[in-house]
Length: 199
Image 1 (cartoon, rainbow, N blue to C red):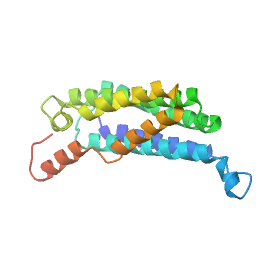
Image 2 (cartoon, rainbow, N blue to C red):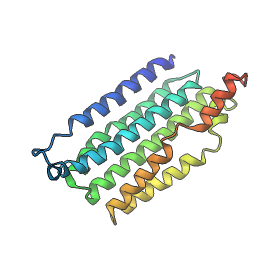
Image 3 (cartoon, one colour):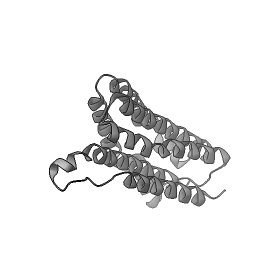
């Protein structure tokens, strides 16, 4: 099965999601800073959601660079991830429209948490498809970063019912942590280019 088709489909879905989110941002009715304040919450959350979609696209791309085999289970796991990512425009718009109310921020966090779990599942499914001793398995290792990130996401969801802005700040911190592409995979790709082990 060709991984290029799965990667191209995923790229297309993520590009469409970013476009949909842009269409949801309507220009303010006035021309001063006070008018801009009316769309500020949606703009802020758009930036956050754009970052998250970019992070998933970037890490998804890097992960597939050191894979050589996909199967039916990998395709299903990939669709599972794309399903949760496809809900981000809805949650983004809801947060902006509600001015960061508790439930919308919690739902946004639940979607981020579910997407993180789906990515974790996809990663494991890809490792099983490649084999336990391949480059991907070695690059991922014990994957402490992902496990800690899941805990932070869950904490953010819980905090949303107490202080939505604190929860949103946690989501932002998590995005910053993942903004740099996965260095474990970068290192593995570099060692391969220098004559390291094969896939």
